[in-house]
Image (tube, rainbow, N blue to C red):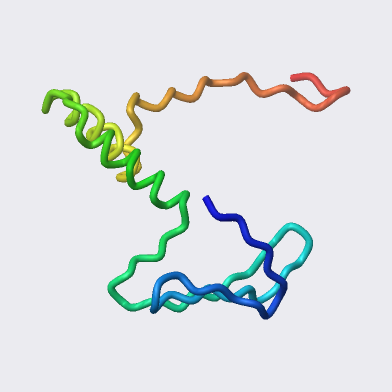
Length: 102
């Protein structure tokens, strides 16, 4: 791994057609401008990690019944259908105001 120090406005070149310029430095945040050909993907590392995790979880084997059960719960929730019938309200005896009795 190559470690370089650059100030705002300075740049570095990778190969013949990729340029990275430091736009600004604000405390611990650094803004970079990257110029690369359209066929070169530029992704944040957390997106690559999330995509890999998503792909790995998609490859796990589950039975169709398990998947339908999982989707059924999601679909019921989206439709607003409760998973259990709502509780019936309980009847309450009215309380007379203070000082007055029937």
